[in-house]
Length: 386
Image (cartoon, rainbow, N blue to C red; front, side, top):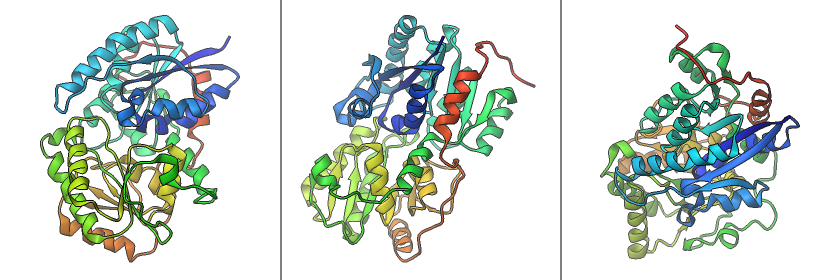
């Protein structure tokens, strides 16, 4: 009898973090995939990640609409609480053998609490990492609720063990997002006929990308609430002043997200920069293709730390959001300062591309996770190991 594996995806970036594991679970002869799509992954304003999942062959077993709108610190706990209520019913109906929760977004707390209280074994992907955001608390809290830990690096494995988890329950599988990066790195950067403007629309100018371009992906930092507008304006002014072709992507749904979005929208309408195009979302594979061809990624997304490290894409990482996360030689860290930011961008533009780094694995994480889910002993009781 196949094990039923319930994977809960709550946001656009979470899908790219788990996509290859979903495929490996779906193809595994001993596993049955139960995909639950929730929160911002269902909403058009954040890219409607569910449409991408369905196009790529993943059929949701359930949907959970639980996002409470609001650009403040109240929306996240309310969204989490509503998610807990709804996911409890979903898990009751699906009766999975193992629940899988992804990474460290605040919505993952609902998945972890529901599974733990319902005596369903819980597997956590990407625990043990360190950052400078509210994700830090969420990640370590989910670690303590989880029964199995599929971490992305050796240092992450060591941290999870130091948190008191039994070593035999902690597996360094690497990061599934590196699997996608490896596939893209083995392909032609831009497939014939791939035009991001035609395929994904977006708004703003359509600069010529043939001689190189920048990519910007900057999210609000929940522990720096009230600063999002000025932080994004620093990036906008700097990139606009440099005058290089730029593809700019919309932020995540976090406290400060509306502030960030409105600042981007207001700046675009007022200044109408002739070299910047703005996108809401993009399929993970196409996004990685664009990154691979970019001269530099600017912002504070973990994609700059993970996938870009493997791809050897230069990154200027802004602020504290990725503070202390393991990284390769492709990252220059700067504060929210226009002079520092422009200097770092120009440094990468004048330097050779950095070498690839495999700190987050070599590209086989999805299969390793599926094989472990098929074989680990089913358990939901645990104690501190020291």
